[in-house]
Each structure stands twice: as C-alpha cells, then as structure tokens.
Length: 393
Image (tube, rainbow, N blue to C red; front, side, top):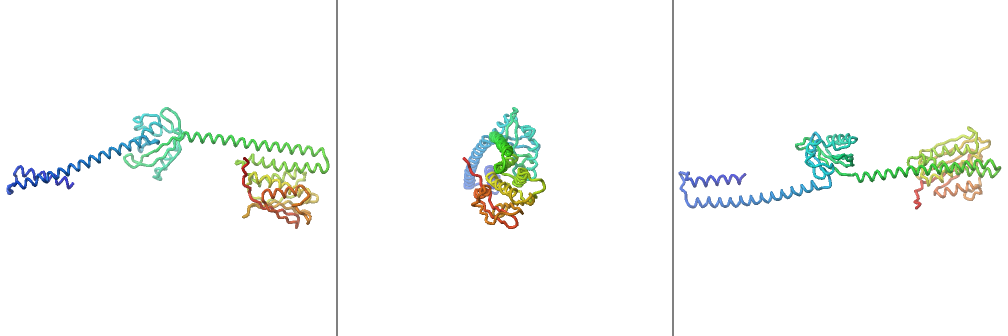
C-alpha cells in the first residue's frame, strides 16, 4: 500500500512539473532530474516486485501440480460431499474404484455406490461424525457403476467450508484382505467341525469299549469281573472327557464341575449302588481345565471314588465329599469319605494296589502334591496347577 501511494505521488508530481501548473514554483533542471531519478528508482523497485510475483506464481503452479499429482495418483479414493451427500469433488483413483468417469461423478449421490445392506452403516458414520467432529471409519461393501461389489475401508471427517457440514472421505479397497479373511474363517469352521467330529468319534469308540467290557463282565466271575469293572470305569472317565470337549465351544477346556458330577453318577451306576444309599456332598467351583490336565485328574478322581465305593462303606451307607476350588498356589481337589478309613500304615508311593499306584503316578505327572488324612474316614487333598499345552509335533 505504501509503495502504491509513492507511485501515485511521483506520477502527480511529474504531471505537475510537465504541465507547469505550479504558479509559485520555478521549474529548475534539478527538480526535473530529482523526479526522473525517483521514477527510475521506483521503476527498479516495481521490476523487482514483478520478479518476486513471477517467482511466487511459478512456485504456486509447481505446488498445485504436485498437489494435483498427489491427490489424483495416490492409491486412495478421495471424495468430498456436500451437506446433502452429493459428490462435489473426487480424485481419479476414487472414480476408478467406482468404475466411472470423474466428470460423471459431479452432483451424484455417494450413497448410490454403497450396497443396500450397508447404507444404514454409512448413515450412522455420518451421524457419529456430526456428534464427535472426529475422524470416523467403517468397513462398507461398495458397488461400482457397473454393478460389481467390493469391500472398502472408509474414513471420513467433517468439512466446514462452502459444503456446510459435508464430508471428506478416503476410500481404501480391502477386497483382497476381506476375501483372505473369509477363506481363513471358512477354514477355521471346517477345522472346528473336524475337531468336533474327532472328539465325537473318540467318545463313541471309548463307549463301545466300555460296553464290551461290561458285556464281558457277565461271562466271568470273581476277581476277573472286578478287574474288568475297574477298566470300564477308567475308560469311561476318558470317554466323558471327550464328550465334554465335543460339547465345548472352544475344544481346549472342560467344565470340570459338570465332568465330576457326570463321572460320579457313572461310577455309582457301574457298581450298581442303589439310589440314595451313598450320599454325595459336592462343593465344586466353575473351573475349566485343558485336555492335558483334565485326563490325569479325571483318572485320579475315578480311582479314588472307585476305591471309596468298593472299600469305604459297609452296606453302601456313607457320604462322599468332593471339593474343587482355585487357591493362590493353584487348584485344590479334595476327595473324602466318612467310611472305615485306610490302614494307618498305608504307603501310597509303594502301594500294592494298582489303583493307588496309578493315583501316585498321575499326581507326579501333573506335578501335584498329595496329603492324606485318615482321621474320621479318609481325605485325599491334591494341590496342582494347570499344565501348559505341550507341542506334539
């Protein structure tokens, strides 16, 4: 502004000098020379300003060209929508994603390129953007101008220029990723069905073995029948494990509360215990065990309850107590009875009975600790931790 004022003043001064309109001033050569010098100086200043303007214009043109290239050639579709959801600007990649010429997108409703099932998701995204004024994102199935569907990750933010709360949108084609995810999901479903079927068949096969053992018991007498009955119980305890895994949604853990209740009922059934004679006292927390831990614990419970049923009570009268709970040092299992009790000189580590030998070996397998209390019946207290899954490759 100051330079413009100076130009005007110099011009007026020069005009007055030329026209000799200053009546009280005598024009001298020095006055003319002064004006000429000032005009030349100002001309140089103007030329420098013009050069600066030309350089600025070149820089702006270069910046605009770079912006145009970045905007149009970036691997992302960009769209600007007005407040009514009409497209007022788009880049070349965006038009390419929608398979339409860029000039044909002007004033076209963006939502017409969204699959009908996902249009409500787009409305919700817009509403969230209005409320939070932050960047919002969503995965939406788009449809091209030729009717081809593709999956897109959409990011948007409000814009406050002439569009009046419109949206600026960045669109990424994620069809390859979604297709890969779908294939992986399908593969997981197939494997889940296969694992479920494997556990179901293992359970069925073990049940067939227990049925054969049960039938074989009818053909023998005495000690042989008792041995077969014990083997039947052990196989049955493993069959229940696989039955629980078959019904479990995760296939890697078992609801042990349900398992113990089922196992106890089956043992009483195998040994023909009349209903209501042996009472049960169960205090079992909802604890889930993995397969590596569940099988040995299940066999331990089977052996101890079987011994109680066979030896602890006279006339099958008494109470079996089972407790399972989590504690700071792991998991505590208690199996007790109020029967005649074990001999005071019992040594479980060197026991002559197969059942107690098996209990000892299984406790070592799960790295557990055993305490036995033979006062007022017999109590087995086992402290153990969940075993980590062992890679079997």
